[in-house]
Length: 485
Image (tube, rainbow, N blue to C red; front, side, top):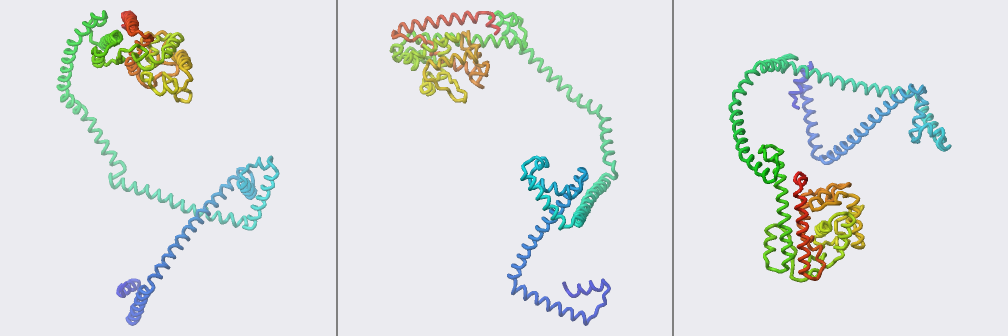
């Protein structure tokens, strides 16, 4: 700050300017400036330490002061609540304070003091006496007066907070007027725009309709032409399928959802029959001609069918899959389960073969579990013998999957396993997927009867069983009920 600035400031305040005095003041100011410069040069580090310590002390004092203010407000408000509670309980303020402090300190209720052990009552009386003595030392009237002053101070801050809210309301009001001209200016503008839009709706609608009408007509005409083309193509196909399957609904040639669904059902059933016949023929030929190099492996691979590997050795000595030929007890237990459950032996062996990976899984070898049965803990169950497993398996089918009784093919068996009393046998897997896995293991159904050492007898028995099951299936599938199932 220069002397000229100080001079002008004093003149504005009405001070008379003494030139001699001013000169002395300027000299004193110059000396003070030199002293400050010397001090800052020699004692800069000390000043930093002092300033740092002062800042730390100031921060600590600020925190202490803030805590003290907060504590004071809490005590004052608690005292006010104590007064209200005393009035509600028709008690004097000192009595209410003594009782409340003592009960809170002990963490008990008044009933505990009255009916509890004597030690609680003794401690309660001691705390009441302590509170009474301290309040007497503090002076009850002075204490209440000081608490009242703290609450009044807090109330003034409450008034300031309320006034700030009212100020914000005034600011918003002024901004609204500045932006819209008045409180309803913006509303009037919006209302006018809406009224204009309402009046223009007929014109807008007519313009849109006039523009879109030709496009809609052209698109509709295209769809109608496509519909006629589809009907002309599909209708003869439906009539042909109706003639083949003897279905009067399809003979009408009407193209609708119901007839298309019936046609797809007939086609899927036919494909399933063809696949079953081809599978059984390949299995029969591979059993009749127990010779390598007949081209059957190539045929089965093309058709997606698994054919049991043969080596010209008698069944039971390598001519049947490992597990069936080497452990005839599996077949015996499957036959026993069939007698207990009413499920065909070949179906049971087919499922066991699928679940154990051709009777090679560790679950079968180590735990005698051929069907993936789980125990109560959710893990795979273990059995001491095949007989014990067979009993548990038969009990599981009879108890949880009673619809498996009387099933004649893998399709019905897979569907019955899906709708058990406690849920699906194979979890979230689809019925089609599980049935497909069963069909991929049908090779083991032929080896059910491969318990002889005569390979020719083995082939003859297998062929007879195949023909018998083919005849049974054809009889069932020729039934009109099957066609609509």
